[in-house]
Image (cartoon, rainbow, N blue to C red; front, side):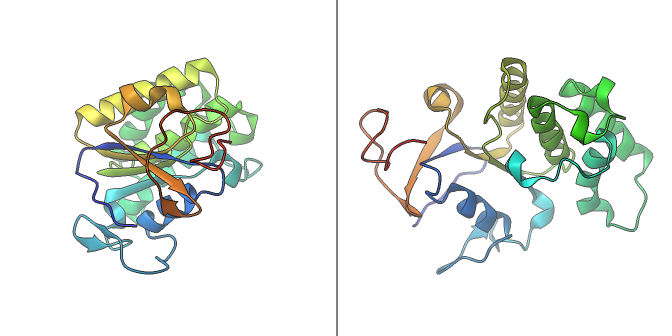
Length: 211
């Protein structure tokens, strides 16, 4: 696979479950090694500029029974700048509070993450990514199985990030937003890039069947 993603672009990763979307996102984030070739982010090998990258995993990858409050989990997004042994500063606390407010989570700040609905949990993960103040956001199915309110809030945040010149790479199954919310699409099947399908039928033989 060879591709170049311009700075400030919004790119959708489309494919079935198992097509390689999550693997590609993790490789760009430097969390997985490339099986061959190389991945460069802002001119550096993947992982070398981790402070400029924010990664949002799928919600199912998080242990929501872990005893931590919404506020504290979101604050961990600042550790990329602080280091694990330094205490958050006033600016960090202010940024966390503003981000919680932006995502409609202010009243839930002291709640345990396990007490939240699925949509609220997804917004918490996005808040954690946002407080990293990254230039590149790698988002693995951020709109999967969320309520309408959460979908509207997250979509609005993506539009704001685009206006700020941030680069977004988003694994998604929300095909209705492709034309209106993205600048480009990368279609994947079995870990490889494939040509775009003529239509999004269900299942689609060109994509191996959409899940």
